[in-house]
Amino acid sequence: MSSISGIEIYPIISFIIFFLFFIIATWLIVKADKKHIAKLANLPLDNDGTIK
Image (cartoon, rainbow, N blue to C red; front, side, top):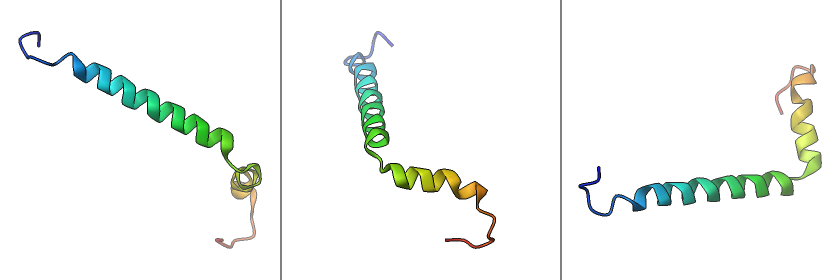
């Protein structure tokens, strides 16, 4: 791998992509509507037999 020119940029690019994905996912989770999250959390407990 050391004979390939410019290969050192690939780990840096992958780390930046992973880090940005992690930050965006965390931001979306923090900013999510709490009522919607509570509704989704209670879906497995609803036994009325209908799909909404």
